[in-house]
Length: 216
Image 1 (tube, helix red, strand yellow):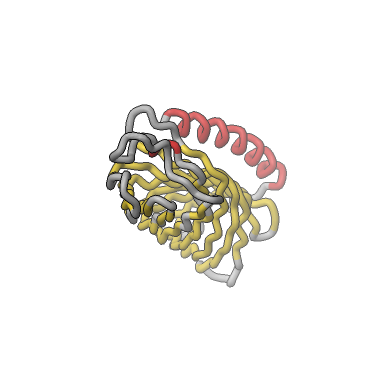
Image 2: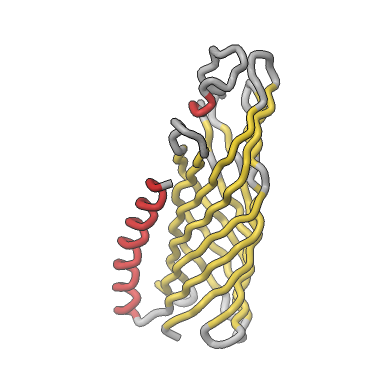
């Protein structure tokens, strides 16, 4: 997890310096938000069996910078700590269960729709990396390209503080030859799980939280 923290901190610092500089020039709006909710974690079907990531609570946050009228550049991070199960289809493989962490680091665009009141619907799209952290020794994190689609609403209770409600579709976590399953076979000769190509584990979450607005 140290690698995840260092990467996110460095990425956040570089992005923040550039974005705050552009925001200061444009005298735009900056928004900070945090949320929690429930994640549908998904599954992957292998030739040897089914790998299921169990649904669980998720947490995250974002910084958004206005770059155009009602359009924001956004960087976000979310984390889900849960368990995963492997259910074998074939002999020679044993059931497996373990703790995992699912992390998303994204950068993208959010479009808001000004209705002339405290309620502001929004949609967004972002790209970045999905990181699967298997919490056992001698297992490396798995990094994959990801894209996130989302929609929701900000409900401002005051000029600067509001409630954020959103739903996201997380696409994908991409698996091909998961080497961390070395030794999972009961016969002791397995070297991983096989796929003819790749597999997408579609994920999604439903969250709520707070949003704070500065510069307006």
